[in-house]
Image 1 (cartoon, helix red, strand yellow):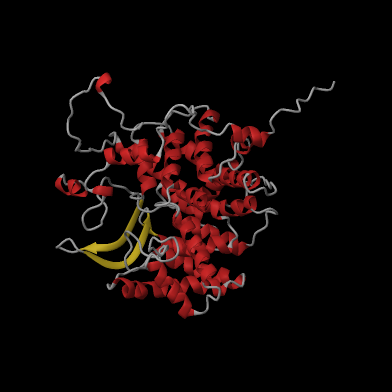
Image 2: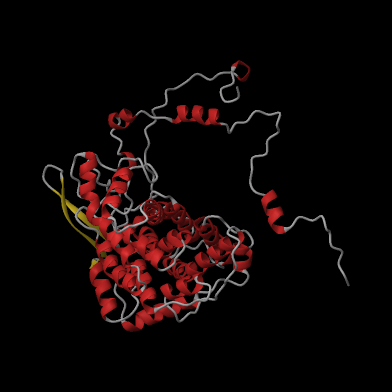
Amino acid sequence: MLLHKNKNKDSAPQKSKRNTLRLRQSKLIPSLTSEASAKLLAQYNSIEPELYIKNDVKRGLRNANGTGVVVGLTNIGEVCGYTIDNQGNKLPMDGKLYYRGYDIEDLVKNSFAENRFGFEEASYLLIMGELPSKTELENFNQILGAHRDLPSTFARDMILTAPSRNIMNKLARSVLALYSYDDNPDDISIPNVLRQSFLLMGCFPAISSYAYQAKHTYYDKESLHLHNPIPELSTSENILRMLRPLGEYTELEAKLLDLCMVIHAEHGGGNNSSFTTQLISSTGTDTYSAIAAAVGSLKGPKHGGANIAVINMVNDIKEHVPDINDRGKLDDYLVKVLRKEAGDKTGLIYGMGHAIYTKSDPRAKLLKTMAKKLAESKDLMDEFLLYDYIERTIPSLYAEVHGKEVIMPANVDLYSGFVYHALDIPSDVATPLFATARLSGWCAHRLEELIAGGKLMRPAYNSVQPHQEYIPLDERTNHYLK
């Protein structure tokens, strides 16, 4: 039997475009979303900087010397970037990063020495508290492998049907959607949260990869390539397989991406997304809500988007300095960037400097060594040397422009930006990969909060708004609608 076809029916893209979220408003009704309204709203919400000092508020949870306000204790991670003398001054030191008390450099060195992938071992350590035995690691890998694939129809219903321009939003939505596929989603007992943590760690690569493919097809008008994950492969191997049209990759590429994930898995608990995980977990909510909130935190360009900023910065440099080996013209352009005359006009050199690390970022040192090997294998040494030149030159150029010397080491984002570019990883996927790596740290902090926390986190705010007399409705004048 033939079904009647309505020729006037909207196509899927037209229908999608027509149904995008917009505030419906009659042309006869003045708008509340104008620039004038925004300026007035800014007036009502502005707070004078001196009030923070007067009320002894640690704005941004930072002390006056730039150090973070201590709001908790943790067994999971430790970041060491400076010491404090008796006068409260920060004294620079070579940076160190520890996972459960183990030096990150030792974890990386030994996984390479034993010619194996290290991310799964680091994840086990962060969540379970101890380095796994060979049998425990094999069992853990099998658990993750069993959860690599998504639930039946999930990719179609939750990812491909409504593509997102930003993969992080799709990742957060998908995490929340997994709640509906869990037979016991609200149970926050430790065995159940462990189960949910392993499930999420297993399927994050597929969610991120499929979300990228959907975006790449719908918005960029490219062909759709979907590859099933393979349980026996490592996290980094599955990511490269699912991102690339033909699913091919080399061992060096997979090992370097694995290194990126190891060094991004945790950073001391004081970072915004890990703190978000603990904050949300303290309410007693479910795992999916807590992890989705962490994804939203990491999406912010001030937190998880720095490696994308590095890629964009280097692309801008190459556009304006075609011969990157001409160091004189390169210096001239970098000076313009520092003076806010070029680039994105912020005066920032992305990938340089860190809030905690002073003399060096241990993650950047580890990544740089392997990045050089990748550059040699892909004939990208000129570009690698550009990143190296930025690292070596920016401190002196900064001193020249601003008239003061500042210790400014390369941070992990400088060389992760290069690595993602060398691995042909789209910039859209850079932050989702960060999330996939940091997920093990988030899950560890959630478990720690549930076990050792106990108290609902409730920060205090001092109100600086003067009290006012109520005005009857008929006596009020328009403020926003004029």
